[in-house]
Image (cartoon, rainbow, N blue to C red; front, side, top):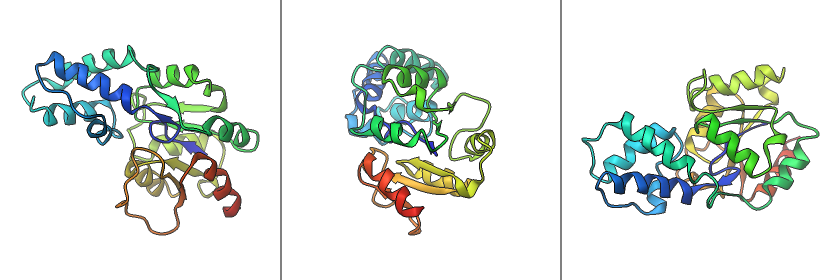
Length: 214
């Protein structure tokens, strides 16, 4: 099983929004609502920064320079408000003895590892890939397929668990099953579902859905 991070295991909306707004204010713009920033998450920090600059009407700012500053601001508050969704730690604890667990996120690896360690779930994952590694970011399936290869698993034995259209597209591109976290902030009612996806309304539902699938 390969998990997404933001919106699947953790609620990181406030810290991401606070970092984005700190950047925007430094650049002379007006801060954005937390929910507005949340909708920008999923395709990596560079895309989040680009979208935030556009929404704040700061299009002339260098994205590369703004990205560097955003990452510094975010590193200062990685765990200020970020928390696990209720039940996540217990679910991972029940899954890990029987399943090889990986984590695939578009968040930079350093920040990812700090969050996993800070929330005490790092030990559950045998493989962790971030968006700044050697593989293209999701929805490119290369990172997911790399984890599957490392696990010596078949793709039809693999489930990608995520909350967004990006995670759904990644699972489909790799050819594996998709479990969507409806409770996550990346979930949308207009996702292009085919009907074979597992839909989890709570983290605990992931266990129930996998049992039914087996």
